[in-house]
Image 1 (cartoon, rainbow, N blue to C red):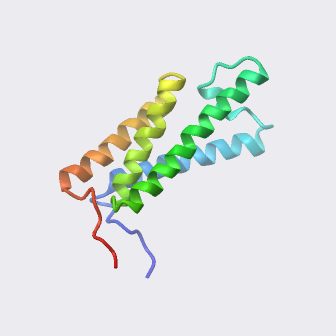
Image 2: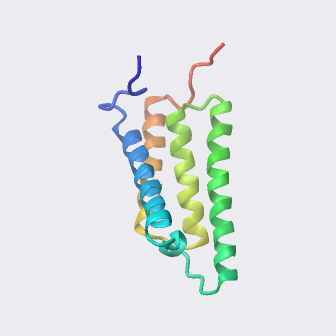
Length: 132
């Protein structure tokens, strides 16, 4: 049977994080494909030249690649998916804040990710049951 993996009443923070990422992706996709190819890095990059923009794009790509690899690695190490997603969100937003600067979206993701991780720690559910 299909449905949500986790109870929305008890894991609303996790689903809020998922909804936030969905919003970021839809917003970026709309701007890229339907708004004349508007620069999606403009919200945090201060690059002026094309060369500087390419460097910033590579920094962003590095952060997103590490985010994905980190989640996969943590899941492979038996970390609960909610905790892995929270750690990934903290890394992604924290690295972009360190590279570029603080902005409301990155700060929101950082706080949400930390809250999800904190919730899993409080519940003592950082690790999943080992599957055979």
